[in-house]
Length: 94
Image (cartoon, rainbow, N blue to C red; front, side, top):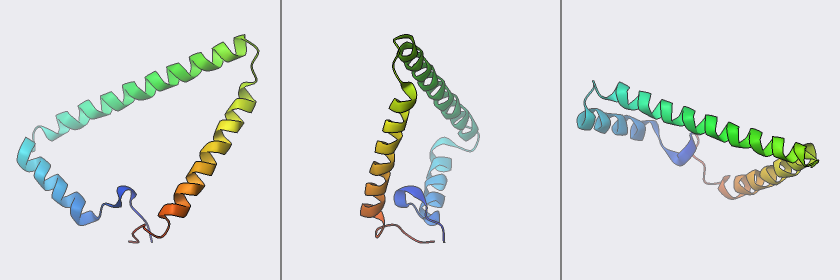
């Protein structure tokens, strides 16, 4: 069994797609998707630029970036486990 994120079923996804086609028309949807893709790519590039700048600055000042990354990853894993404990019984099974 596989779970979908955001608790959206396939029928709901189909309904959303139907509404999108009705509102925007079939010819505009590829343009919208292309624009969204470009926007997501630019956000990803900006995030990577910021991350590399922070790492360079930390290395320049002699900070231990590996230890910092390990600590952050441990905290992220703890939060993921906490969320999994809370939402485990709520997830839909498909």
